[in-house]
Image 1 (cartoon, rainbow, N blue to C red):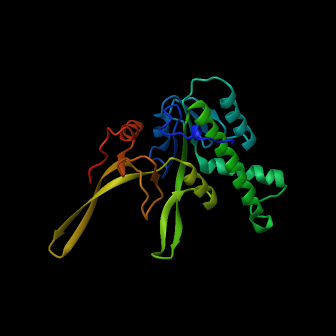
Image 2 (cartoon, rainbow, N blue to C red):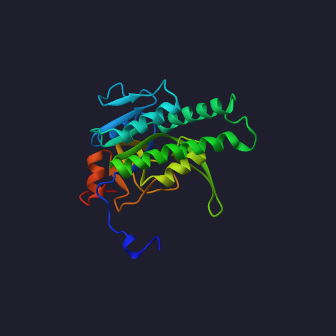
Image 3 (tube, rainbow, N blue to C red):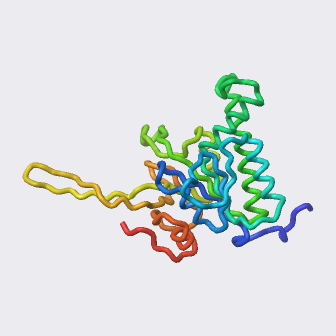
Amino acid sequence: MSITFDDIQSGINPDQGMKVAVHGPPGIGKSTLGAQFPGPLFFDFEGSLTNIDVPHFDLREKKFEETMDALRLLWGDDHKFESLIIDTVDWLEIKIHDHVCEKMGIQNIGDPDYGRGYSRALDHWKEFLDACEFLKNHKGMNIILLAHTKQGQVSDPMYGTYNRHTLKCRDKASELIVEWADMVLYADMKVFLDEKKQGFTKTTTAHGGQRILHTQGKPAFVAKCRFSIPEELHMGYEHLINAIQGEGDGIQK
């Protein structure tokens, strides 16, 4: 037999990193969060590191093939980096689409019939995620994928149609990333509302503006977590890792 009971495994491998996707609006602090992970190295696709002093490859003018070359460099060479931060996947997607257009000899990725351009792009997404998986499994690196958020429309047979915040990629690519990641965190601003009534007039005032991470999905946004942690956390790597280690209580509602 090629497989025996001795091949059964159990427990958590402490030498393997985490696969994390974080999406949220511009300026919420996604890049700052990524920089807080241990031993960070950024793949900068959008130029968002102006005010963050962190090691990075400037890939804004590079092609998708050169992105894969940078990943292979991390595979093969010894280095000090513990976390790879992709900033952002929506800008990486543009490079993937440009790569497909170049290889297929087309002007627009939507030109080929039957969605063949988008299908080819999805193959390259899988190639990229497989390379990240290799870094996690064989180099013990954390992989953090940052993304802007978009409002997507959900058609639910039970609850009808409604809007939901999700990663700002093509739907199939977004679904692939969500399935791949251990955690999908939605970064947002927690706002508290005060209602005051004077006579027949009611006024509502918003205040607070606390930056938080949502760890569990809701109808309003995509999120998930394979760890047992609170639904809302203060935004920051320390709060996240403490929650995973069972040392954080999350945000009181």
